[in-house]
Length: 264
Image (tube, rainbow, N blue to C red; front, side, top):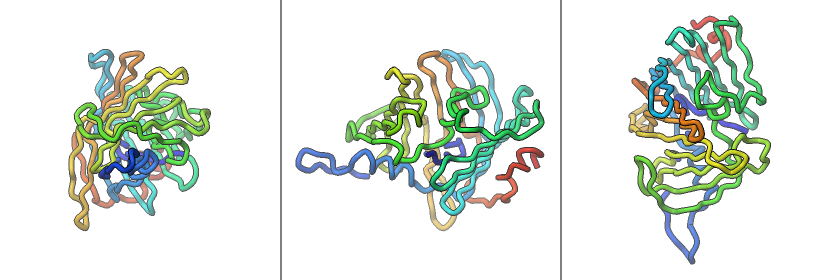
């Protein structure tokens, strides 16, 4: 089962020791990451950059709408440029207790196509993210082992390190994942994904997190740049928030197949 991300988009306790064991386990860390608070609405301008061995190949501009309603998250992405992907639109709707629904509108075909579970390991609009990477797995689908109570990785320090292994190997394109999770916001800021031979395949890294005020005194921890790197090919995709607004209501029609078809 999978749970939506969220708007690039997207996604993690204090620790004490007792009798030589961790006072928190991997399942609890990942549960808190899974359940962290999200904005009721979000609207963002996203710059998506494709690169190979550090050299930029293409820059794409994307509009993204997000909604969290009745505890379920939906996201719409609208590709604005360049011409090769312009007017491509993607909708992901989270379901309770079953896989997310996903649809994509391809202007070359002039129709909306459902993205099936068999498409999960395919690249998302030519990026280094797959369709399954655009969702977060249900905590219960994996076993979670706390490897370290504190480690530094990338731009963040003092992180939990959790190894997540699918209970059903056929349910995931990865043999296991290792997540480095912040202790204040429970955000996995660095995730290593291993192929079916146990070799490191991809790394998903959050470069920065901003605190953003919402309604009713809420403050959200918003990832501002997310980079997925295929370490076996040297290819990478960066999703960077150019601008984002939270908790300003959006009309329900944005989160429909009709909007995918018409763009309005």
